[in-house]
Image 1: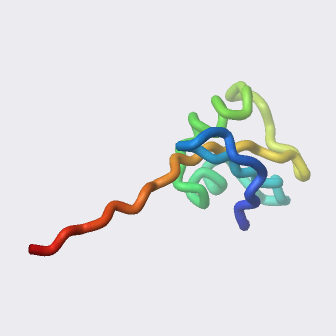
Image 2: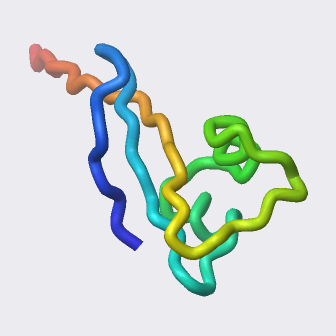
Length: 73
């Protein structure tokens, strides 16, 4: 499973999409993207009863991490 960059949401977060493949589960996808199943459900307006279908694109939002310069004395 490879993340696909879709669009920039704002200065501090970006949106990524994942196309569901045969055998995917919410749990396995959550592990790949280092998020929770609850986050996937929320971001995609799913209910716990919603089933994944092959070919469906799920949205993910990630915070951008800014590199901080370290000063050495």
